[in-house]
Length: 317
Figure 1: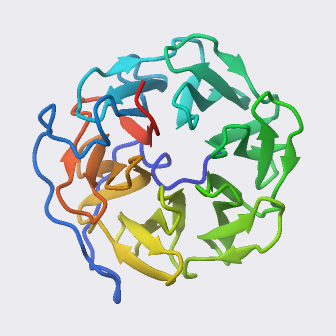
Figure 2: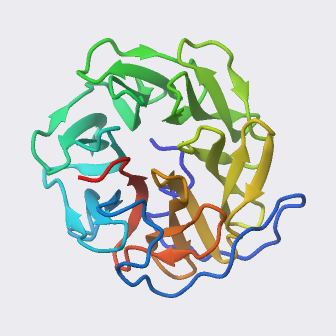
């Protein structure tokens, strides 16, 4: 169902081979620091929270968890049947949208930040990857209407009404709403590989913003709207976090990805930090945090279970 690089790898821990950095990319990372003592993160102020998916409560299912950006207070949010993924905070930090898989269907749900008030937002066949509009009145998500449908990006009102397609595909997924509210970034299969595209919310001005060739997925707008973080796969068998400077159309590599799979970037509200998924050789994946220039990467979740797909709350509780 999902087109992200990271979730396709979290089912089985893979042996990853190292490789060389792609020519022309700027390497801004340093070697990871072991551990992540509480209170040492580049969090966006007191009370900053990160939601993520984890199977730490039950290895057979993923649930939504929330942790402080300083690594403290991890707790499960939802206990209902089904496997939950792709959390997305509402702009006011009061609600979390997420995808729930109850085979053969997958739907978008919304829950209050304290775990109460859970309800289904969509009733489609395969709905995934929700993202909120900056004003909280709408969401974008991926929809597949049948098992053979390659997928498109849809918009829906926050009350679940008036779902409509924004794109027509093929293989459109993982939308990210721009901070200005006038555009949505997403990934599209193009000549065998995924690229990041941007389209206005009225469906106009569709354009590719990353180069053709290797897969580029997991688009995430920066709070300022001038950068898009994303995941880039490389021939070496790993993946990296990169940042696109939108006005300049230039890319910077934040993580080397040597012996590691890095993906699913999520910006802190102040734009100074990025949370992301990292899977090291012979290990399960965890949520890490680094500075927005790629420096000082540190393990946030430090748990033997699989932790992935982080989402940073815009405001404290």
